Length: 164
Image 1: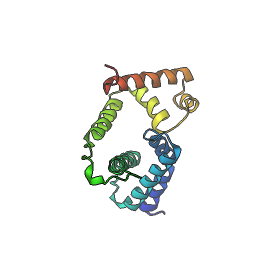
Image 2: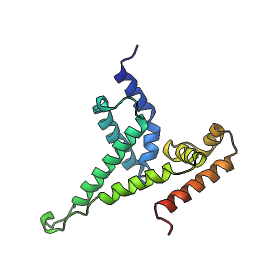
Image 3: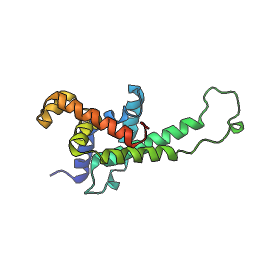
Image 4: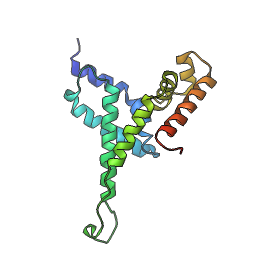
């Protein structure tokens, strides 16, 4: 019988494709996205004992990734590579609360989606699956999946104020 730590580590490994897909929402560059995935995995595996049984591993990993991204973003705002000016002569770094709020708004907007839209949206964008896989999984035509995903995207954009 496997030790629970081993089982948790195996579950983390199975979620790597979903982590890669989620990282691509933060970075266009696959190299930057892969770096974020690696940092997330290092943090998660290094703190696996802090995972609480009964919670979703994917949610826990996504939270770690979002926090890692926010930390990286704040650090990049402070760095001025190649600058001859003294950093102390620059103004303060803007607060990052807006990023946290926007992340919570996005989570809430996804949570308010009707189930067929939310399921299709998560299958495509969070899990990183293809439309064809989604059509097979949900037992419906590919056009239905595309329609659900498109409607989900529009509702989310409207809910977070992208469309006024």
